[in-house]
Image 1 (cartoon, rainbow, N blue to C red):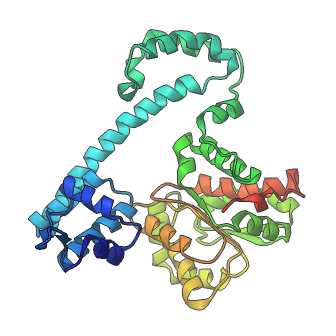
Image 2: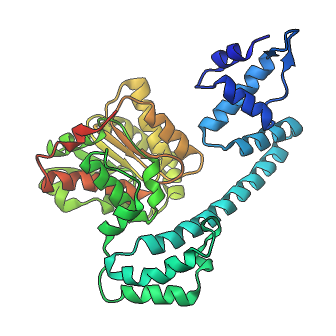
Length: 367
């Protein structure tokens, strides 16, 4: 039997006795046994349960959801029943996200307005004071009020820079080029929260700029990715672009995955082309998986991997694997991604070389 201190030391991952006591209070951990001196004592089963809690928490699950998952697993041994329970839990979470997205949309519609529309914000702010922000949605503001606010957008172009300054989190500690990439990713998809999920290795921007300046080859996973690349700027830098899966009929992630596995020639071509090239993966998770395998098992060294494939199981797994490698990379956690976003990353790096060829602000990244 272990004391609470020994339990936390065994599990690690920053778990403290205070956290363990909290887990007892909310029912995540069962009541512990007690010694003759009334000290908490823990068994191997408690260690395993706490390790499962930590693992689920590190994957992004909230404590309430972890409690439901563990309860379902203990109650249901049938895999189909467990999956059904998890699907229901997932739908509940998605519904909450939809409500939060509606709230964010309403707030973006107010905060993101530029100075030319500020005179029309007073009425909206007055109405917001009468409502609870936690329950505020786009529908809570009257159609009449939205029409009044929207009337000011027809006589001037939208000031995206000003809106981003108001909506993005504080990026003052980030290098200028990194902020430019994050800003353009947000503009490409319209989701301000995306910035919180973008991950760059320390040397990603430096390596990308260096190899682009040297005229390396840029390889996209399918034609739509390569077509979105900034060909004029790449040509100016002396860089060629090519496609791995050269099938002009492919237009989405499902087709990209299917074609990649149908023809072994593409897998062989990938293995032969990894070293020294920049890879821009926006659709096929398996392409990113194979790149990671080549780095891990054969010591291949791509110049940079922009790994943003879309997917709900393989893509997140491939991205996590990419982030474990000692190579330059840019990725987005989870299922988010796509060919347009992947191309935006590469295009902004290329643009930075032409617009600011002597810029070394990427070296100022803080640890």
